[in-house]
Length: 155
Length: 151
Image (cartoon, rainbow over all chains, first blue to last red; front, side, top):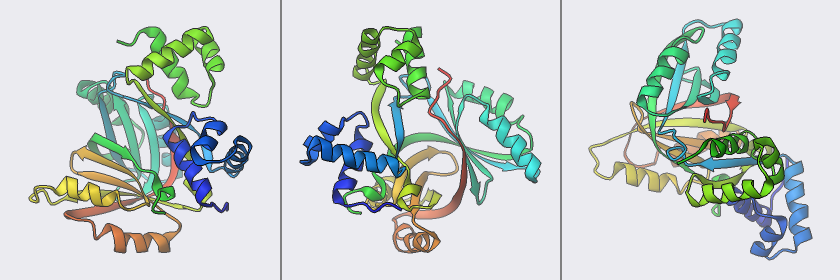
């Protein structure tokens, strides 16, 4: 596992805020030379800590006014039913995230929809018809905030 | 507001967030100059809110990720504000979401191992204000994590 110093953490914070920053810009912000910043970014990338980029979209403005998290319990268990369910749920374009979880539910899904009517269509036609699906709980997302995580200034 | 070309460009950006402008341009069938102009316009209009590096917490030794689903005591007038302000003070909290439904809030909590999680849960999470009920979902595997939109 990679050890981070305060400068590495500052680089991660800067890139988590603006992933399009060049090594030169990161260096200028932190008082490092461009080559020094570049070497550190390369080391963090090679260690798998920097794992790509994410484009943040305003979902409302892009026409997706509703995001719903679903907790799904399978009615039937067994290896085959897990695989069938996972294959089918992954193929639904409106399902962005599928997490296999332990606890009250078996899976946690993030679903985007244009509006509530569109969500109802997805729920009825796509989700409730998934193989092995049992109890489903829906919670409509009102707000979402990503935090810096354990590289934050307090860490 | 968005035309078909904007939608095509957004689709490509979400499918390959690492792609540079020239790569995106050829995928979306546009010139690089037109691509830059459209990206700038989408940023100014607030459709694209930002581009962020993705940090793999496992590579930093955070092997445990738990979804904590919280129900608040809504008889307290500032339950949401107080709870969220206190949750922001915990560095291991990576996401805070609020919901309309049976669950009021969800925290995504990172921990190095189960011992560390246990400590966080007892010392930091259960001491958060106005909790009426709390359930945990331990993440076992990510089956799909896509930014793509059926746009």
